[in-house]
Length: 143
Image (cartoon, rainbow, N blue to C red; front, side, top):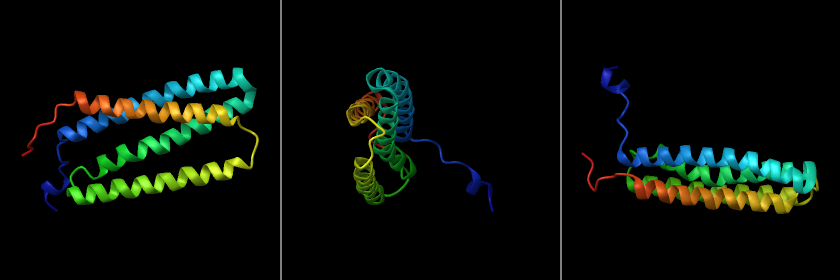
């Protein structure tokens, strides 16, 4: 093996943007966990806490898979990247639907807290993604 095989590929502008987006999303979900658990507890005790924790988990699955898919396929052909992103999107949609169907039969969590926390996480993450892309300095051409 040559040293070229072990040398990591330098990060492109796109990768830097999505790494920032991933960091911002994790911070958002951390804050949302603290606030959601606290408010959930005040609203409905432990059922509110469980609703908030499940909501953050759903937001993490839903928001994190796209960013990670882009980061993992940054050096791939555009068609490969789009195929992975679409596959991840379909996969996470199925996972979220299955989780919600399974959870529907239980009553240990507050469904309203779950809904509000997961929506806040997904929308907040989308806003942070848009902000990272808007502020990112990505050239039209990469050598």
